[in-house]
Image (cartoon, rainbow, N blue to C red; front, top):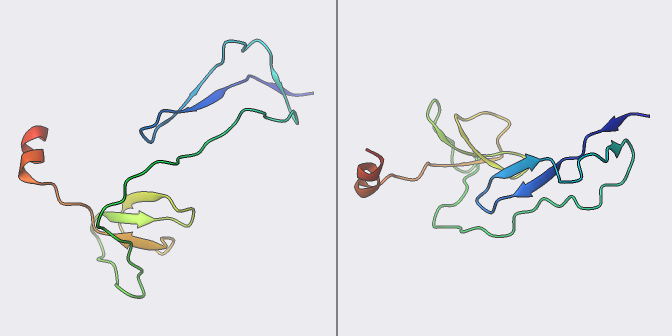
Length: 102
């Protein structure tokens, strides 16, 4: 029977997920064993004024970086591709933020 080391996924609250070894890592996970404590969810978010646009209603610009909504509902940055469900422009970076980044 195959066994695999136990790992834990932790949601950090800032959109990042960590993976690590629990304190009782000596107990291997047996293939087919139910996973009792795996829960990955993100409940909190802040939505602003921007809205998603569909390519049918508002054709996306080509060859420039935009926000893309994939079929799983995840936002990524990239150039338009047919796999994307919707798109939105990137947010503008105001001068005071550019100064912080400089």
